[in-house]
Length: 416
Ligand SMILES: NC(=O)c1ccc[n+]([C@@H]2O[C@H](COP(=O)([O-])OP(=O)(O)OC[C@H]3O[C@@H](n4cnc5c(N)ncnc54)[C@H](O)[C@@H]3O)[C@@H](O)[C@H]2O)c1
Ligand SMILES: [Zn+2]
Image (tube, rainbow, N blue to C red; front, side, top):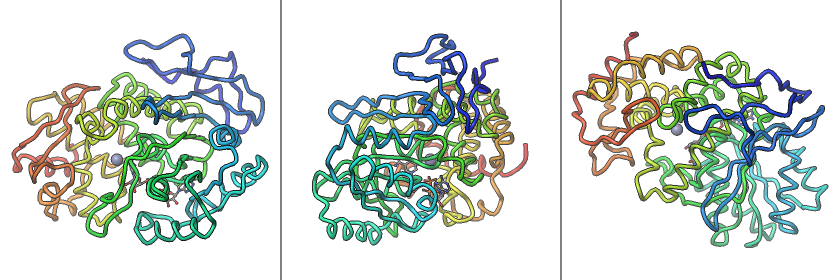
């Protein structure tokens, strides 16, 4: 059984990595015994920084690094001192995150000679709007932000997408640094350069590709994250296992307790593997032109329909993705592409990670198929699904019979 090796070696508050070797994810099919060149684990004493991994995102002149570990806020400032010395910085955050994390970051920035501007937006999806973006532009103009200004996103996916959009468009584009504070933002939205805001008629419709100059995932920042948000991030984590890495999937299965207890080293290693996997996909298809990036939408055709039907209120994105992955695996099963194993193992994981294992029947009262046809991922109204061919591999399937899709959703609304 593969596991997250060494996970008990790191304790919150007193960071101790004995033996100098922590856990390392396997790259392909075998567990690596050596430290990879880009892993910089440090034998640490109390309050010292532990960088579990630095993941490069190789995009030519837009390349950058994602640093993952604990107690990293101080290091962000050191990185910024190298990347953006003497430049104005604007920290964008939301009210929930600001109360805990803005002060330490701002103090650290000031100590290093920066004069940071702080912009705090209301929490929630409604901040991904033109009016909030416009308010940020106003603040930046008032404070004489120029083309050398660096925008720092300190928050979840909402803040990252919004701040990134502002950075992509202010003065035809300024530099952007991400400090994600939700699990979802660490494993998904902060990697890959998609930034944007919502249009009242369509989510994420106004945006750009704008890569950050760096990303820091400080696992300590997840300590205050509400349980439901943490679990939503886990749905995306498991997704990477199903679409790309069966060993990672297995490691999640065998590390449930540590994941549920948010063991910092296990979470950091898990985040690092997700970042590596997403970086691989983004490197192959930065601007979503080759189709490779579409594999990240596994479960999402269903999920978007569920979210729309629930008005984005009663169902969180990660919960919709968990249900969507169940439906996608079942659809693949019904099409004869896989046996029942993947569905069975996914459901077992959702149960252990306290994510939904069935689609609530009230969701089926909506016209979910019509919603799927309108999804921007569909092609001219034709449904497209990312379906597993085996654990760790998926492909895109078009022209699936709509009545079968409907039937599958009905099946998935009942306990197996
Ligand atoms: N750009 C991309 O590639 C991409 C990918 C996936 C999702 N997204 C976007 O990400 C957004 C969802 O992101 P999210 O799930 O992070 O939601 P979010 O940013 O709304 O954060 C969820 C909630 O947690 C709070 N929060 C954040 N960090 C916290 C912390 N450390 N402690 C306590 N509370 C904290 C926030 O204030 C918010 O209330 C959506 O808008 C989605 O479209 C973008
Ligand atoms: Zn998602």
